[in-house]
Length: 66
Picture (spheres, one colour):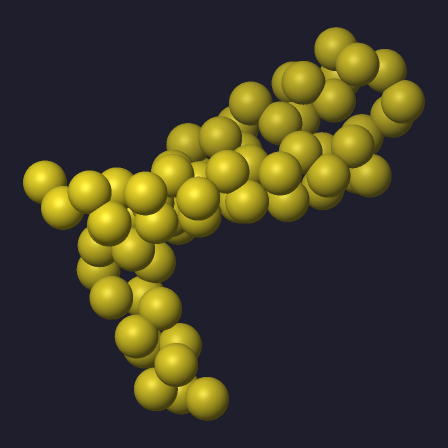
């Protein structure tokens, strides 16, 4: 496995999870357990998004479109 791609995947995953956590905090009531219940379904989505962006040339497609 390419270590550069793995590092990039982990970085994208970390950023995507941070964004997902902020979205869950804004959308849900100010209760930590409710915020966690909103965030948990977002975690698998962020893993898929990070995989597509890093390993399926998602960043290249975005750069080509710009």
